[in-house]
Amino acid sequence: MTLAAQVTAVDLTRRRKRQTVSVPTTGNYVQGGDPLDLSAATNPRFLQGGGFGRVPGEWAALNAPGGYTAEFIPSQGGARTTFLTTAFTQPGGAGTALKVTFTPGSTVTGQFRINSAGGTANGKTTVNLANFAGLASNLPNVITAAAAALTAFLNAGLGVVTGSTYTVTVAAGVISITPSAGGSAGETLSVTASTVQEYAASTSGALLSSCAVKFFSADGTELAAGAYPDAMQVDPLLLELSVKMYKGM
Image 1 (cartoon, rainbow, N blue to C red):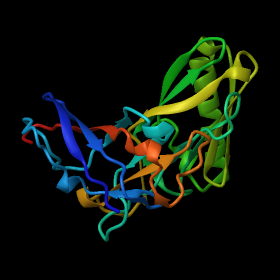
Image 2 (cartoon, rainbow, N blue to C red; image 1 turned 60 degrees about the vertical axis):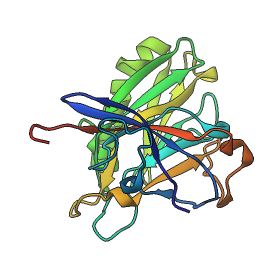
Image 3 (cartoon, rainbow, N blue to C red; image 1 turned 180 degrees about the horizontal axis):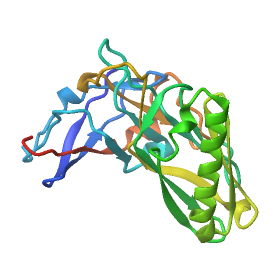
Image 4 (cartoon, rainbow, N blue to C red; image 1 turned 180 degrees about the vertical axis):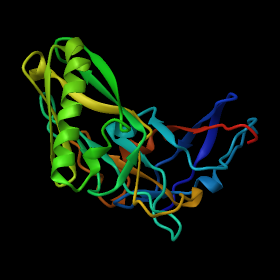
């Protein structure tokens, strides 16, 4: 079913418009991403600036209804959209790899924030894909170079804080970031925010009406198709969605 969005807060500056939307999880879940039509988002409190004119380029999930995590997909389906799905999972628990899945040969932009908890010390870092775009390449030598660069970046920054050593490998579009040594035995890596957009090189922009939300259980498995679990229906999903503001807009 198509999810409904309700604007609950708006933070508007000259540079950015950030909105919090409430998304009740009722009805039946569609695997691959339940449709979310932001063009139909309601603003019942008549908040100034509430509503969407462009597809958000940045997002963060503010809660985890029933223990399920959510991923906002900027656009899904439709003749004019070419955005692809980027998945972030940490299926194995403490001490195992954080996995980022791209479509080989796609173009990736934006950044994502990695959070580390449970190791020698907690830490976080932001991965800017402008520096590691080769991770989504379909050329082995380009992938190898990008994986080596990300390994060096993580060890020089996040590793200094957490006491862990990180290794980045890529296979069939799946980037695995694995902690080893240091405090890695109890360390859990997760993605807490993302502005990542992934798309085919020759495609056009996204549509407000064809966004989606994908849900994952604690072990990284996507929610099964069918009725949403009762535990998810107690509180609605809260998403923070942002667009950059430009002069004249």
